[in-house]
Length: 253
Image (cartoon, rainbow, N blue to C red; front, side, top):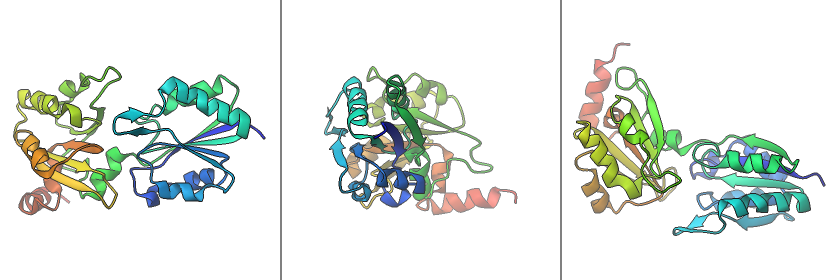
């Protein structure tokens, strides 16, 4: 029984978006430690003998603080063998996966990373919003809306100065500050999409502008888990049919 940790990104929520390599890791697990945003359907692929342990956040409450979770991973690996740490999206995109890997390595535990499909890219794509499009957006920023100090990232203000598409994760609690930063940068008319529970049957979307999106959120009762997309590419969503066709017809092929 060799201790091993495999960090698996489970994707944005739809269980079919798990990679084949991630599936194989789950099938060989002795322990699966999974987060709240992971589809429980994926747990059915674990062997019958595997220990299945929930370690995520639920309604703002953490089952474990990060340091205790790091130690839990090590304890399970040393006592049972192969631990699969199953995390939503991609483990290295605001997932604290690197911290868990390094902690395990300090105990001499073999580690492997299986990348996951990040919600920052997949959820807009599934909704029909490309993060980049020739003639519309040349780049995109992926930002956290909440830092380790529970404050809004200062990078939001910097990103607001650019013409790039902004994708903000974990930002709903700071939405008022986010739109204030954008409005101050003269981006009040910039379109915004907020997608809740992206890629799942419970998906909800709200469309507006920097100036109107808070009203949209209240009207549509949007809440976490959700991602915020800000930029002209939002006009390519099918709901903006006229603007979408004008944009596409202006492109040179």
